[in-house]
Length: 159
Length: 159
DNA sequence: TGTTCACTGGGCATTATGACCAGTGCAGTG
DNA sequence: CACTGCACTGGTCATAATGCCCAGTGAACA
Image 1 (cartoon, rainbow over the protein chains, first blue to last red):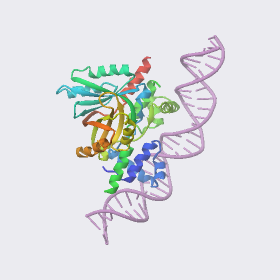
Image 2: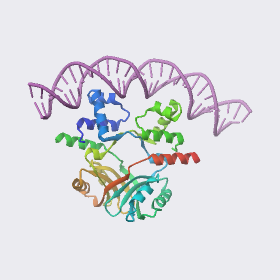
Image 3: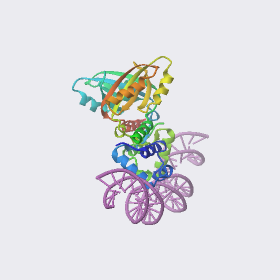
Image 4: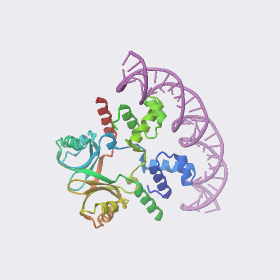
């Protein structure tokens, strides 16, 4: 579950140069190929590395607008709302949360005008009482994991 | 910029079986290897496919708690706050938004108690006026892109 | 002290890769 | 209508990485 320094270096290296290959990694890290291979297998079966799916940029697909919507759900309708939102392609992720809203989702749209269509489709469902939307203007820190991996590796070392 | 049906199938196939390789893809899709290779090159230089970085699960790293924080920023302090948040490993992403808050970030922590530490570190900065946090309980729709890719591919076909 | 485990460094056959090529069908252009 | 550009096909080639195996070593641990 916890990762050591070598694991951390493997992940970071992989994040920086995904097409690198096990052999080249072993050269860069100064360890045997079998070691890197074993570590990778372990990280994957641990679930630390979930996979190597392609990172697709919605903007490049024609969906440059991102927004976060906070939803308030009618009591007992949670499951239905989840199922409904799962059918909307523009809903990229959905969380149930504590706080003022009951759910929070990430949306994308082709334009600000198109966002209206998406929101209508999202909230056009009986179980949703209210939605409050925040449109993303800038993304100063894109989804990242490297700093956390380094942190986790350090914590492991010092223990 | 727009993708056609074959592009869509390539991306979906790659998302489902990331370790598949160009040759096997060409077999599955019933096209020549060179075609798949050319498409992939194009998708990557287009920026549609940003890369193939490892998907790391923060929970497996020991950070099972996720939260979203909405931040209100003192006027003119935006750049400083961005720089500050970029130094916090537990801040996985940061957006500037319209709406009630000025920024929205995704946080992870080792526990609910640890989340307090992370929030303290996040808001322990002069430019941040107020923070409101929503803890994630469930994640019914994990970050996904396939439905959107399929949608984009369909749109392209019908045009 | 003995055992377990991870790592090393090596070898092996299989397989994919990147790079080519000529030929073909299609779409758009002059 | 003929021409041109383009994407795709189906093939080859040398190079390289992969998955798998092995015995040996060192360190941690019981």
